[in-house]
Image (cartoon, rainbow over all chains, first blue to last red; front, top):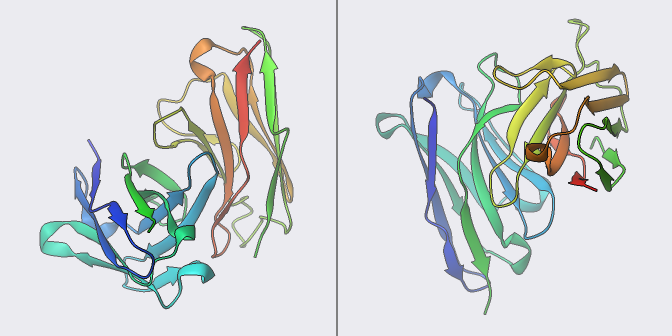
Length: 119
Length: 113
């Protein structure tokens, strides 16, 4: 079974940094596009970033220059380095796997990790 | 950016009734020569991550009950639950994957009357 397990969330002050991790298992990690999607409390879903199998990365405008998506193949893990955090970044962050056909819909999701940016 | 607009924001129906959720995109989602609409639907129960229901606007994900169906093309899409069950109480989202930024609709909350 596909498993995605996020970690690294927590409370951070505005301007601070966090690094989220997503440990994966049950599929060939190098064959899958991987994504981060976030959800503020009581709000809808917002795509944050994509790491394409070929290495290309994509970001929503609001995080460009502040967030960096990366992966460690040996550990089958996905990461999201988040810098210069603001209160608007407060959300549950989900790691999601892109479809096995290579299109950017999400066929598996982790349980999420909560990031709270507050002074 | 492609804007996704869902309606209604919420609906309350009796068990066994048909639920219809609409999703409108600001651009056509026939994004390549494969003649497919780049539109997915997700279900999210409270406190849980989203779950993929439908992709290519009408293809049901493996394991999804056949009371869920997707239809539409171009800019107008519909998710239908043919006979509402108690476990279908959730929020439903549409998502376009035509281009980045990938965007979602605002969600439709389905409740039992």
